Image (cartoon, rainbow, N blue to C red; front, side):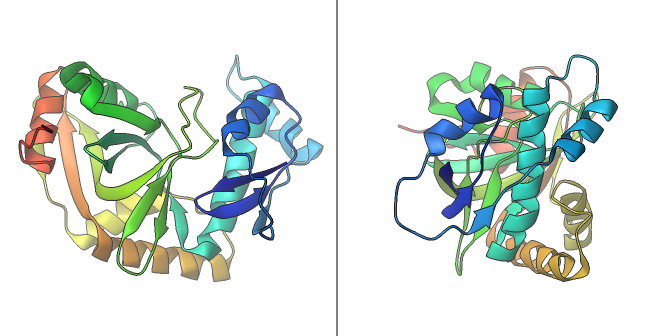
Amino acid sequence: MRILVADLVTELEPRYDDSRELAEPFRYEGSRETDIKLHVSDKLLNNLMEKAAAGTTVGGMENFALGNDFNRKAIAFNTMLIHSSALVYDGGAYLFSADSGVGKSTHTRLWLQAFGDTVHILNDDKPVVKLCDDKAVCYGTPFDGGSGIALNESYPLQAVIFIDRGETNSVRVPDNKEVIQRLYFQTAHMVNAATAVQMLDNIEKLLSLTRFYVLTCNMELSAAYTAFDAVIGGRLPE
């Protein structure tokens, strides 16, 4: 089947329902040539399953592997993974990024609790950002971290917020060196030299196209209000 992800025509043949069902809303029936071909071998899938956590399904692992393949190949098309929970508010995307287990999904769910229908989650783990000449656009993908939240939608990227866990809530603006370090660990890496150069170019361009924050927060509802006030400035939609 062919799908359209981040305006990239992508060819894949999922063998398991998990990947097939997530890919279906992205199905592409147009006449454009394929940009990216995805492939997950039986050998790779078996190796990944041997290292997987208890309870991981082979279908879920296939989706993980397909996502990894896409995210590495998309780098050449000025597109980059940002491991994050992508929240949509007032027509813009806000990416809450953190290492697994820190609580990025927990935090975005606090926004749902605090702001109700004015916000929704675009992708809970693996959205991508396409870098255009004068803007960055966040896209949903059919690759997720097990939540099943993977919408075929796109929005202008407004900010990337890195989350640190803490007892109290605060927000600060990091310098470019810190942003680069954090982005490196939250995007597709372990790539060849040529792709690594393009990856760093993508990161550098993203620095000029959006805002970055570091949110130190607890798991209380007040964390959502602290982040909202600092990042959006208290603007509520009419």
